[in-house]
Structure formats: structure tokens, C-alpha cells
Length: 111
Image (cartoon, rainbow, N blue to C red; front, side, top):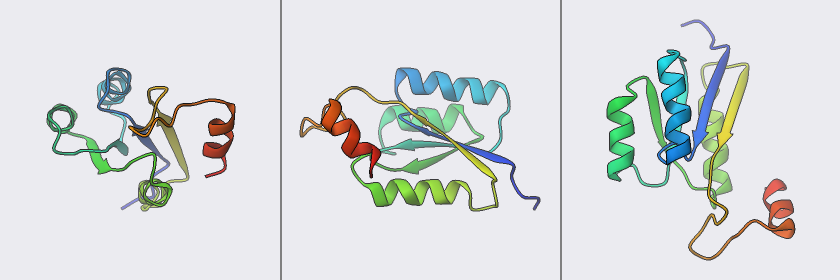
């Protein structure tokens, strides 16, 4: 197998905006696309896996930095030179109220 030039990772791909990103990649027949979802059993995640057959589904959560790192490493597993990340989220990431403000943005950037 030839090394991959690039890989795309879409966090939040099962939402309204993220699914539009996946739709674009699917229409362009973009290879090496991963959609990250917290819940692969969710109806929306199942729909994405069925409709976007060239997209690999992965399980991940913003609150798990080690898991996110693993997903990004996995995206480059076949030697992808560049990994492009599309991070699509709502202002509140967690049920615990992790909302983006200046302090939390700085904390998140250092993860």
C-alpha cells in the first residue's frame, strides 16, 4: 500500500455542521476521512456510517485527551504526511458545563 498523503479527521461529524463537512468529502471522493463520535450506537452515527461509506467511524470524546491523541495517531497510521483536523462543537462541550471562555480556551489549547 502506498503511503497516504493526507488524512482528514472530523470531530463532531454527526451534527448538522459536521455532517455537511462529511458530505463535502464524500462528494469529492476524498480518501482517508475519519468521523469521530462519542456514541457509535446513536442513530445519527449509524446513519453517517451507512451514507458515507468511505468514512471511517471512530469513538472519541473531547474530554479524553489521550483518546483524541490516539485517534490522530491512528489517522496517520499508514504514513499520512498531513492530518487535517475539523473540530466542530457547541459552545458547551460537556454536561458538566465546560463552556468556552478565555480561561477554558487556554486550558484546552494546552491539552
